[in-house]
Length: 168
Image (cartoon, rainbow, N blue to C red; front, side, top):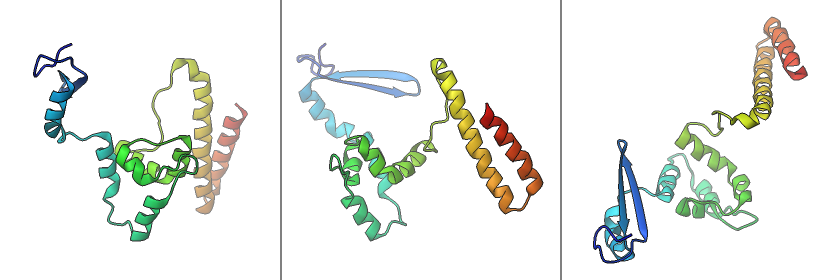
């Protein structure tokens, strides 16, 4: 496929832009893509988006900022600062190492740090178990609150409901 701009060289960069359900495709050679790169800088990449979401936090102290820069993954050596610049984690252990920061980031981007959407049919049996476990956990949390508030009548009802769910 030829470059849409010069028409002479083979296109190696393929861009697809979707705006208001209108799809625009642009095929560029390497040279034309470099020339257009200044124009493309206005579009946010993943790394810029992620760093923009987490960089500005007026409540972050200098000590916390230094911790973000110096905390490293024990397996691959990646820092949270590296993640902000690249938009990618180095290994599976990075998810554990930076779990607090990633949780905050996911809440800012998606509004939650847990997936609560639909489950594929083939895993429905497992999904029901997961849903029951979540329901039981939520009910136990509610039960604790009722005991603290000394609302024992409601607490007894919840306790029985939890036992019924656990037996299933």
